[in-house]
Length: 111
Length: 119
Image (cartoon, rainbow over all chains, first blue to last red; front, top):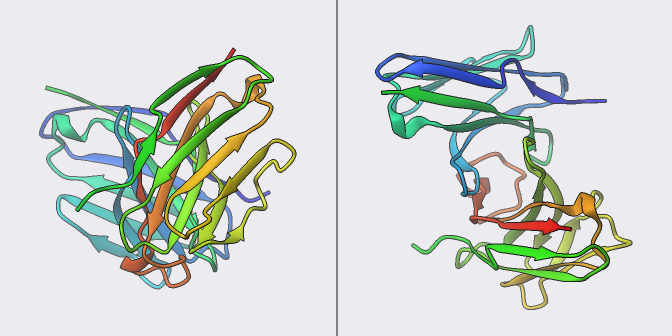
């Protein structure tokens, strides 16, 4: 069946480095993608989204890249800070835009 | 602006018991969602309300789960009877609109969740 998955379950980086979190999706009909950040004991928090008619979108310290050819998207976090430590989920939306979440990647930032 | 409120934050019950969770969405948000998040997994949508009507409950195990949003504001999710596999965090989210345009009005805001442990 269709699925949204992540390449790496855990990513460890040093404070100040750039982080890249990857995500693969299999539903070619998906046309909306969202990245969420979930800190321990909290609900997911919207970070950034991108529609399928775009390849790149930038926010504050974050950039999402979408490669529709290989059904891959990534979240880049510039100058990673300890406060960025969390689980990051990519989610895909079809026609209804209700997100279907993948498993998540745990980002650990070392001071 | 107040966020999505949920209670209780934690609940421990024995299997075959009943449990109920409460959610108060952000004021003015027409759409309300309940998700189940099993440890180590992403949230899975259980049910979506638009005002007081159900939009999507295709993944709700209706033999034991029920949810209502009678006045189009607060919502309750009930499990009766609970099973061991129901142990999870139950997240409530709300959005202005019902997720059909992918714009800012569809952005979901999540509450802190209720962590349920079934023994």
